Length: 177
Image (cartoon, rainbow, N blue to C red; front, side):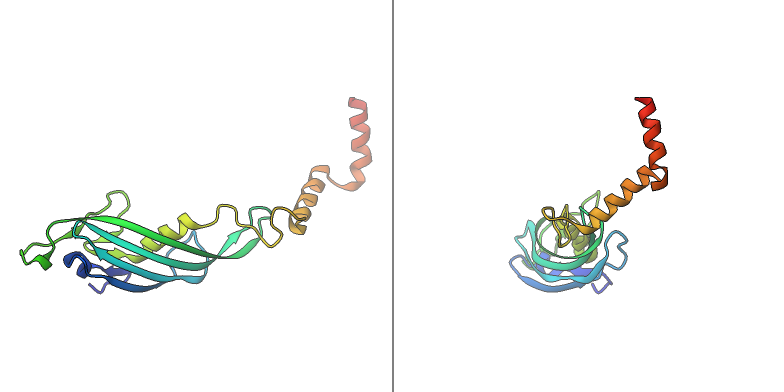
């Protein structure tokens, strides 16, 4: 099957024990939630036991994320492993029985079209799950972050209002006490 975005795994499904290796690259162009600087790339190994289809691979991508401390955009390289098993039903045609084995579809979130993997959907899931929860810019949590300090100072100034009105505010607060 040579449809765009599908990775044909039928040879492994129909011939248990056959090992396949794929070099994958995808820019996830239809993904609005991810801002990729470099596409997701990696290597996937595929083998079927007859009842289970095994997918194993390591991947990497460079994304634009938001610093958890100062909110500034940062470029972050994300490396991740995926090791998944999918149920195969039926008898593989490689056994000469005239039957056909198929990967069982997930009802809620399908990853296969017949025996072809929806490559972008699969890699998108892996990348989203492996994004850092609190990415940090070069200042990290420990040292002073000039961007965070500037944002805090601006926030305090907005709360206080114009500096010329500070004396009036102090008089009103003194009278209230």
